[in-house]
Amino acid sequence: MTKFLNRKIALLLAFVMFISVFPITESFAAHELISNNTFNEGVGLPWHIVVNDPAKASFDISGGIQHYSTKSRG
Image (cartoon, rainbow, N blue to C red; front, side, top):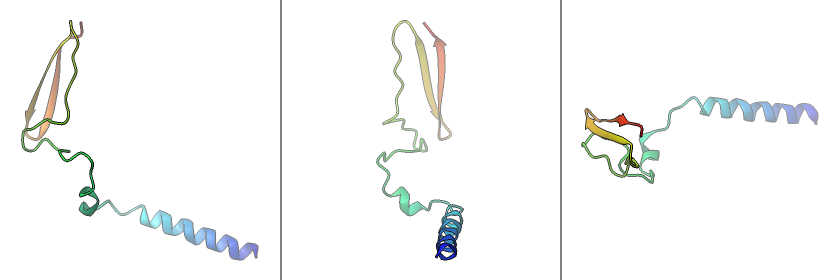
């Protein structure tokens, strides 16, 4: 009984390790809750920065990347 159970557990663990090697495919991306997860179209929403006075900051989107710049930490 113990050998049988050990084999089953070993097989299950081997299967889980084998499956974890494969990357997540695009079909899972269709179920993303946040629709805009890239900056390729130059749009930063829904992502935004919050800056309280007296701090100063700015951001720019170029080349699909959103760049943040802190001008004054306040």
